[in-house]
Image (tube, rainbow, N blue to C red; front, side, top):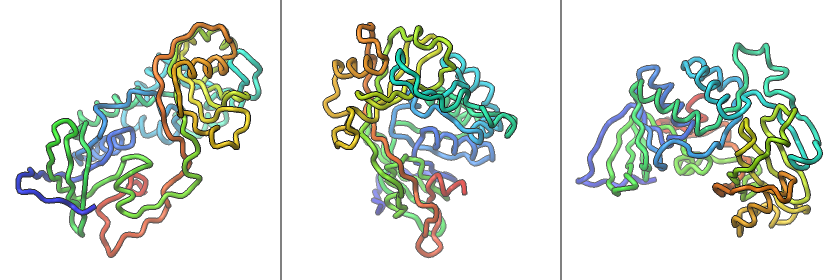
Length: 324
C-alpha cells in the first residue's frame, strides 16, 4: 500500500504498531509490554469482542495465560457460564438420539502433559482480561481506528491510521509492524503472503437464543453439542443452567452438495431462525426467543509457512511469522 503524505497530519513514533486488537493483537500487545515494549494496537471495532466466538483453547494457550497470571481468573470466569472442561458430543438433536461422544472431558488423555490443561472460555470473557492487563503494563489500545496504508524500508514502517468516528488521520512511524487483522488481512495481502487450504466453506449463521433446554442436558458433561440431522449441521454451546446459548449453523438441508446448503445466511429471518432452532433442539413446541442473528464466513485456510521478502526488508510481520 503506497503511503499518502499530508502536511496537516500529525506524526508519532512507536516501537511496534499492531494492526488488529482482537485476541491475537491483544495478546501480542500484552506479551510485548511484559518485556518493556509498549506497542500501539489499532482496532476497527469499538471495543473487545461482544460475541463468544473462539471458545476452545489448547494447552499452550493456557500455559501463556498462566505465565501472564491470568489462568486462575480465566478458569473462574469460565465456570460462571459453562463447564470449562465439558465433553464434545454429537446428537441428532438435543432431545433426540446421541450419535457419538468424541471426548467425555476436554482434558481426557492430556492430564499429565502440562501443569495446566485445555479450557472452554468465551472470547468475549477473555479479551477484556487481556486488554486490562496489557494497558496496566503500558500498551496503548486504540479502538474505532484502522490502518489505511503503509510502506516499509530497512529501518522502519510508516503507516497512516484513521479514526473511524472523526475521519482524522495521523501517521505512525514504527520500528516494526505486526498484522493481527484476521484471515482477510489487508496487510497480509499487501505483503503478498498467500493463503493455502480449502478457502470458504460456508456462509454460516450463529443464533443467540433463550429457551429451557435444561431437561435435555441431564447426565451429560456438556461442552459442545454437534447436531447432525436432515435439517441442519451445526453445534450448540449452552450455559450451565441450560437456559440460553447459541447455535452455530454451517450447513442446511439433507443434500450437502448443493450450493444452497452452505449459503445458510441467505434470506435468514427470525421465523427461519426459530424453525432451525426447533429442529436442532428437537422439541417443536418449545417456547424460545431469538436474541440475535449473526452472519459469518467459515473458512479453512492458513497462511503459507515460508514468507519471502524482497531484499533484506523485514519490518512487517503477520502475527504467525512474528512469533516464529
